[in-house]
Length: 178
Image 1 (cartoon, rainbow, N blue to C red):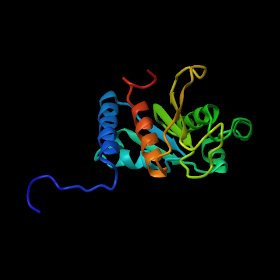
Image 2: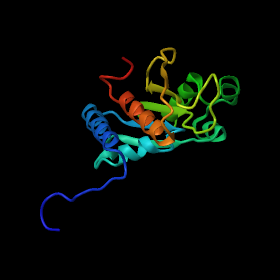
Image 3: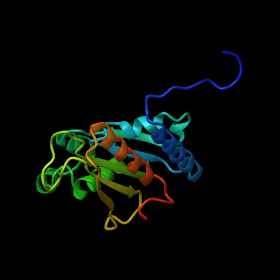
């Protein structure tokens, strides 16, 4: 191939890559470092962010902590929090985000934990229940930024993509937490 930009191919949905590009460009412009802690998305948010050339200028790390044991080992989520509130809870998501910040040099962290299905749901937490949290370095630890969403059970892949899109939106400072 001579001259011109190389053609790139991705297996990720276009909407995910487009939003990830916006997240990367916005955070580079702000000089902010970002980190993510993922459970039900299994690294999908990190994959979308690293799909963007130059992402290393802002994206510091992605923790994939699928099991409760790894949420504790890698992110420092208290076993008491997991036992009391469950893995899919605002308390756990908040602890994941705080743990990702503590274990990185990032300025902002977003965490995702949920039930992508097809199994694992309950009446209280049906398939499609996903919890997000955002924590900022130096932020007020009493000011918890978290959200519980219930996505339609349109299949495991669709739930994971919807959750990844929401997590990426939380990494946009002008839209996060509003």
